Each structure stands twice: as C-alpha cells, then as structure tokens.
Image (cartoon, rainbow, N blue to C red; front, side):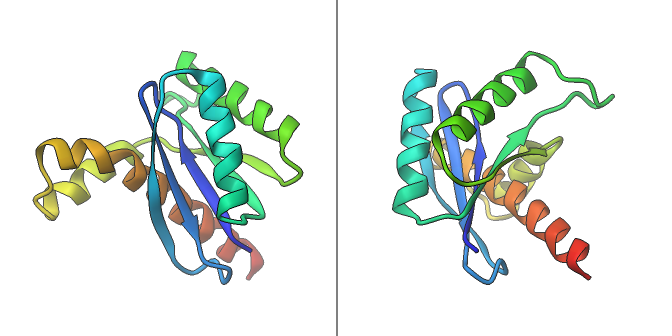
Length: 140
C-alpha cells in the first residue's frame, strides 16, 4: 500500500510517499502555505493525486513524551484529515527528524535556498522510513 507522510510546518509542509511494496520512501514535495485549512485541503488533494491508502502525520512530542503546542496542532491536523479522508490517518513520533534531515543535507552539502526548499520533504521522508520500519518489524 502506498503511504504518505506529512511533516506539518508553519510556512512549509513536507510530503513523502512510499511505493506499493512499502520498501522505498521518497520526498514528493513541499506545500508552501501558512493557512491551516488550506494546508489540510492541499494534503487531501495530494492523497488523491498520489493514490495513497494511508497517511502518517509527524507528531512532534517533547523529549519527555508530553504534547506541547506544536504536537497539539498536529493532532488537530490529523483529526481534520481523518474526518475528510476515507483512509487511516496515524500520528507518528517525529522527535529529532528535523535534526536528522539537517544532518543528511549537511552530508550532501545542500545549502542556502535549496536547503530551505527541501528540508521539510526530507523530514517527511525520515518520518515515513521510521513508520515503514515499524510496520515491517511488526509483521515479522
């Protein structure tokens, strides 16, 4: 099943999708939008465009496991998607994914404006890879 991961941001929201075998996760783009409801609409459109069977929303919990303001915004976002879509929507712990994304981009020497444009999609890919790994290990 194709699965889409969403890294919700204030100005940019990253998207990643895996193939039907759930083996390869790839960044598919960034939604540049600040309006919360429009982000929801655009993600709903993207789920149809990429024909996904599930959505994973990054859930940025605090390091102690509690939910701060950002995590609550993601919870609201996931709930809105769940109310609109006829596919499962899952919140997935995304602690440290942006740090990992910065590390990957440092390794590839991606800097400046290009880095700004891809960081959220890379973070979404890391979220999706983590989720896919969990699914694979849960089946075995």
